[in-house]
Image (cartoon, rainbow, N blue to C red; front, side):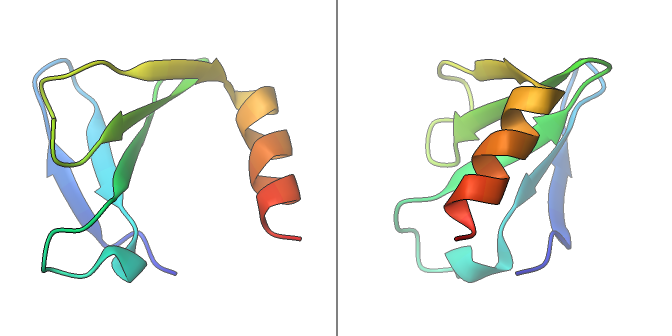
Length: 67
């Protein structure tokens, strides 16, 4: 996976979508990092809700998801 695909949004967040997402739509999430948080949103609803979690919690989630 790479994080080469990104979109700069108002508010200074750069949103990254996994290279696994492809270009044909599908179910994807985008991630942006803030000062103390990681923000996650649905790539098809960029104006919709954003989940914000602490960086330590995100790191733990990613470590478990990679198993």
